[in-house]
Amino acid sequence: MIRRLILVPLLCLSVTSALADVSLPQYERVELESGAVLLLSEKHDVPLVGLQAIVRGGAVQDPADKNGLANLLAGMLEKGAGDRGAAAFAEAIDAVGGKLSAAAGLESIQVSADFMAQDAELLIELLADMLRRPKLDAEELAKLRERSVNLIKAAKGADPGNLMPGYGNAFLFGDHPYGNPVGGSEDSLAEITHDDLLAFYENHVGADRLVIAVVGDFNAEAMKSRLTAAFGDWRNAAAEAAVVPAAVKQAGRRVLLVDKPGATQTYFWLGNIGVAVDYPQRAELNLANTVFGGRFTSMLNTELRVKAGLTYSARSVLTRPATPGSAMIRSFTETSTTTEAIDMALDLLGELRDAGIDDEMIVSARNYVMGQFPPLLETATQLAAQLAMLELYGLDIAYVDGYIEALTAADAPGIAAVIADVYPSSDDVALILIGDAAQIRDAVSKYGPLTEMSISETRFRPL
Image (tube, rainbow, N blue to C red):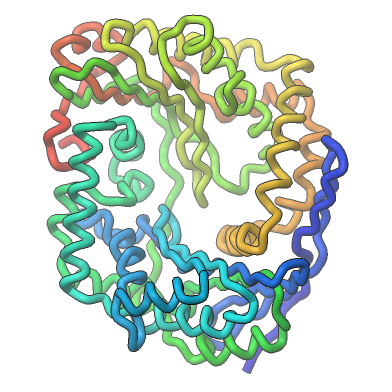
């Protein structure tokens, strides 16, 4: 039996000016008896179907010593399901020119798909096999685990900047679940067994965790019937989902130095705990971050790259999960200019907090954000992902529907208040560096108590 809950609007974009009118026609939300939630919207402009399935959970559900387990499971969902082995499963997708992939994030496992409308029945069949009947073959797991370890090792040798989120979040959040490296570490991946994978699937994948959003050229009643047949009788996840508390903000400074002997560059990441996805002043925050470090002409990039020539890129990044994530600056510079670049970044952070941004900057940032927003919500697959995200975090449709209006209403005092609330004082930051410790250790010790580890160590969290 199906319980219809509500009809709610979906995105209809009319971009005629900088003040794009983002309005929301209807989509249907249906909750199955199994607990799975369906979000359905017909969109008949092109003969395509976009789908986003979300399983609530993700890396925050990884056991403490087995980070990367959710990520491995996501990868294994593509390695055969139902009656198809890994090769046959991939061939079934390729034969119709479809796209179907799985990935893990901090708080969910996502399955994304893009198929021709005429192949929608095959899409649902493959999705049901992936989620309900994955092969989870032990040999495929061994290959995927080895590949994951090798990718970490390769990054340490060639591009350690890609590992900064792993070291940074582990140091900033400590034992909090947001400190879990989504892809795992060499240590944690080595501990993961086939039995661990099977247990994680049983415990954390089920109908009560499932959201399926489908947008495109289909008949809603027919799609509802197919999805009900596929997931209406599915079991629930066997374990309770872990509740993630809010992390405690960093007080004062502390430094993690990851030693990479012979490195000619220092990669640095500095920041503190920020805000969650439901932060009410999202528009003001996005405008502030655009000016500070969210575009090429930002304060950080202009001063560190364009004027000083200290780096090729400097950005400020806000992660906004269910509870407050990180607010951080990341960049890199030559070893000899390590402290010069970090000092400049800290000074700019202080300048942002002290002076805020003026009306001219606000107008420029508003035009930039308004120009970037509508193109992200055009295709059926993009729309399905947006709907699933709103459902995952319990956000109202005003999160999208009212965004342009909120950007238009944002003013300097409101933005100044948000800057003071979200961006940390330069005296209250965790600072993570990857570089040649012998060359920079003494200089960077001025920033705070120093913890040191080698990049050859097989974990991201320091002991």
